Amino acid sequence: MVGHIMDNPLYASRLFDIAEALFNQRRHAAALLLYEIVAEVEKYQHSERLAICQYRIFTIQVGDDQGLNLKAATLFEPFVERLDEIDQLDALKDLANVYRSLRLWDRLDVIARKMRDKAEIQYTLEHQQKKRNHAQLEKKLSRPLFVYITYADLLCASVYEAKGDYDQALEYTYAYANLDWVKETDENTLHWIKQFQDWAEGNTYTYKLLSGDISVLNNYVEYIAASPDASEKEMITKLLNIMMAANRYQVDVDDILKQFETEIDSITQQQLSADMYTYQVVPEQSTRFKYELAKYYLNKGNYSLGFKHLLDVLFKSLVINKEAFFISCIKLFEQFKQFADFRLCTRYESLIREGRKERLFYY
Image 1 (cartoon, rainbow, N blue to C red):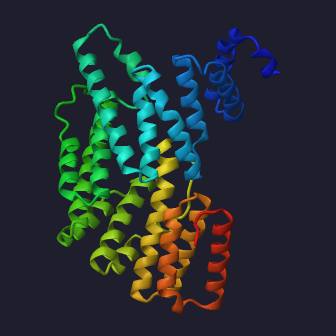
Image 2 (cartoon, helix red, strand yellow; image 1 turned 120 degrees about the vertical axis):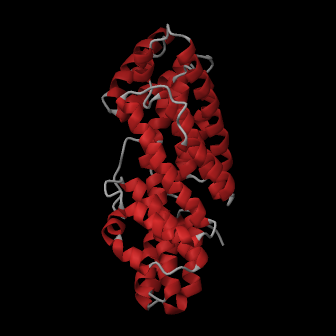
Image 3 (cartoon, rainbow, N blue to C red; image 1 turned 180 degrees about the vertical axis):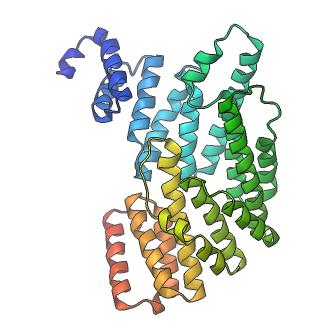
């Protein structure tokens, strides 16, 4: 029926409005159909409506399959500049979270810096032009305006962390720890300032720890223990950092694992979320944590726990289409294969066959 209606391009505006209403009602399957049709009709138009359609399509399509997520992000990115200047900030934030989950650090670096530049311009305008409607601006954004600047610094720090440049990562961390320049004093702003300062404290410990300064480990553990209300995504990241350092510098962390046994058990329970960070980065981080945990236990000779976590990661790699994880798991399993019993080897071979069938890797 919609196909017949769209013989007349004048109906595009009305269908777009219906799609927006469906999207706001979280009826995404129906909205996606309409967005795709409107986008097809307007594909030769350099319009903001086309850009919004592509943004909505991107948001709806992002899911567990990281191969499809990369395709969705790649298709959407060229349309960001066509969005309203304010809408661009959330679009760049969402793109950044997808690229971060995919560990595409060069792309993340570009997007984060672009988001920072645009947010700085908007923040300056916000405080230069009193005629701008602050309440309306804040309502349009999913975060306070200054957050897009500080989050960009946090993302740049993560890029340098991934490259092993912990000194530069610390410089960006110190930047988003110092928020004296923020002019707003409302409750929401104060909440976000406290949040970034908390992240900065934890990440300062992290970068020192990963650079080999094991002397901060006890302080880091105390910092984690002092945050019992930390979200699941924050706890995953903190415990992952400990496991990476433990494996990198051969540190015994058995007592720490026992201390956070309850939190570690809950990490394996992935919950879906509408938030792009939670939906994308957390499953990737939890998978990385379990891989580091498997590596730690195998190196310690605790083969039952080591292989359990390793095969779980191997299976999860199939679900999220993560080739790098899959190959890393194969290498680690082959390294310790002599200690695996027949049941474990059988399951391992089954997952390998599934990986070949899904063309996740080739010999």
